Length: 134
Image: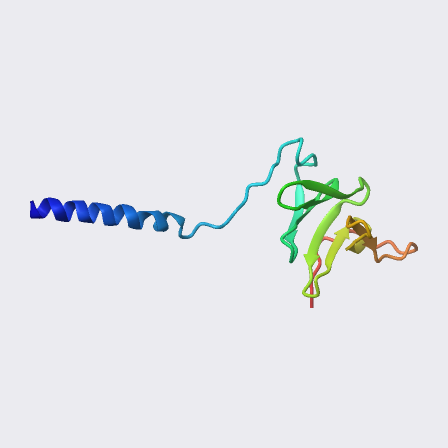
């Protein structure tokens, strides 16, 4: 009877302790929709960055995409200016490198995210493959 009690006790302790052990080491990841309906973009992505609000930006071959945790939004579409690189800087600005352009994201009066180019019209900048903060 004594062994039976200890066996039940050890079994219950292991069951109760096992639940927190299963969660250790797992990242809090939310799977977002890659369906054609929700994502609706090219399959190749060049960069993924998250801003201070938790919004995820994806440099896609056809679009700059924004994911707010529920829905995908296209910041802009350009077949000629493929998005190549992203950087969320320490001062809270999202910089965007493209084919032959460079700029940052800002918010319109309506709250929509828009791209603001920093490239003068007379200069060709080439492919911006990476953006670094010094």
